[in-house]
Length: 434
Image 1 (cartoon, rainbow, N blue to C red):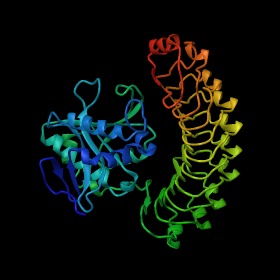
Image 2: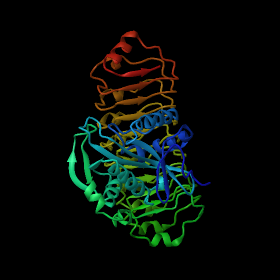
Image 3: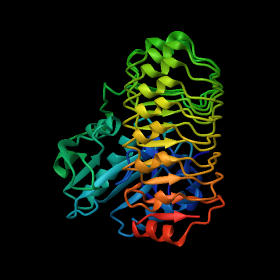
Image 4: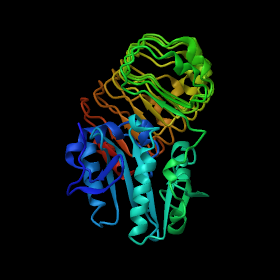
């Protein structure tokens, strides 16, 4: 299906893209993009993936409001060849600034590694300078190597770290109108340190043998390809930092996969047929994001506690009845997603997760709020929907318990809290839903 070439919602066009307003017809695609942690982790003051489809509607409304001033906005990037929305490109004033303008982009993983962010951002920069801007910035997480590579392709100059915007330390890049005018074809620039092979949704069934000779690869995307096994050749790709194997038919994994100790970004194994993870998983000590959701796992290996760099673990919709005590070794963990398992409690070591910000325990078999959570100093969101909780513990009223809590969701339980507890949580600024 071809995309829309021109229309009342169109902001600009490029050789491959139509940059246009988001519409409510894009709601499903918006949710697909922004419910992904690999996208959401880089966005905003407090990064958070969408969890409910209704959030996508609110997102689209916000984007359209940001375009009231026609010079600025957060716009959908539509591919001309397919009509599919690849993501968002934005040109907006920086929050709490003095009129500084930023350019940014958020893309679905199926559009990574194809120059789409560079093409869209380059066109938006040109539009901004044509409207009279003299300088445009980009601000991003210091470890967001992919976006930093886009900034360099755009001819932007790194100016170091700043905490001026978004309440967090960010890497800042800038480009002036004069610099942009002298760049020529910046879209042709490449980053030799970021080599992606994207085979997403290619019905290949069996990975071509020549893939395993691409030793320069840093990102390998084999999601939704229909594969049921990986050959040992994957062990030759020692430069890989990210592997996406989601939505396939994998029932087991080759041991060579866990020899790739350079994996420092993402390992996606969700939506397969895995019944177990090998103990060798613990070798991936540099890994930051692990998704093993939507499998048939009855347990997590004890060695998972050795993943000291892990900041997000997703193990939703499996068959977990307990977590290993070693889970407490994940001292860098910020998000833990355990929805749709059969957990009746949590090990004491969960109390060691001092960096944990978000804990999703929705749709398990908990009969009470686990007492081990009381000491978590940074936990902001606790989702306990759809468990078997009838009473709330007295310690929840203690201001020293969960001091950073912003949202406690207890819907779909048979809970009747005391008025004192509700008042205490509200006084601390916590939204509590029953």
